[in-house]
Amino acid sequence: MKPQFKVVLHFLMLWMVLGSCSNPTPRYPVKYRDDTNFNEIINQNKLLVGLQDKAFNNYISSNPEMHFINSQSGFWYAYLNQNHHSNRTPKPSETVIFTYQIADIDNQIIYSKEELGEQSFAIDKEQRETGLQNGLKLMKENEEVMFLFPSFLAYGVLGDRKKIKTNQPLIYTVYLKKIINNKKN
Image (cartoon, helix red, strand yellow):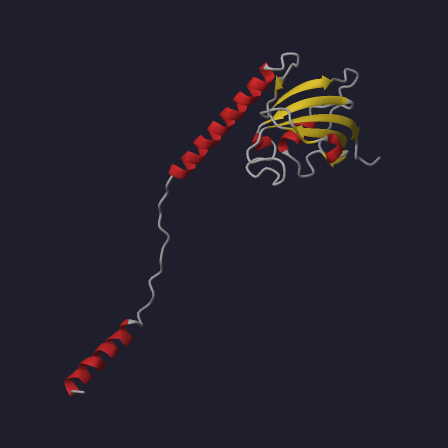
């Protein structure tokens, strides 16, 4: 090798070593906000709620013998058997014992009362579907009520990963057997 080439080669190597010893510059996050996806999701949810409302309105109009009430929580309900002898509804922390069945909007049973069996849970203390929690709070002992729950108050985006589909509106028929006050005397 020629001595001039060696000098140039050493100079390049020295320059690379010294050049790589500088302090690293931090990578800052890019401040970029794209509301396109967010707005698209909002619009899809509005469309879904509108479709489910339309399905419920069709169901209600095809069952004129039932008197459906629109709740403040976003679901519809009708009494199949009403208890006029009591005013007592479940309070938070009280345990309710009930049976129910779940059907689709075409009234095809998804889960029967026999499949689900007798249920009990403490109001507002256990994880259950929001619609069922709010619906039971409206009931008195020995009442049977039909609830029309939009998907966001039932099993939502995931369904139950068995029989209930994604974003499926559901019809619950619930019979409240007993309300138990859990306070110790």
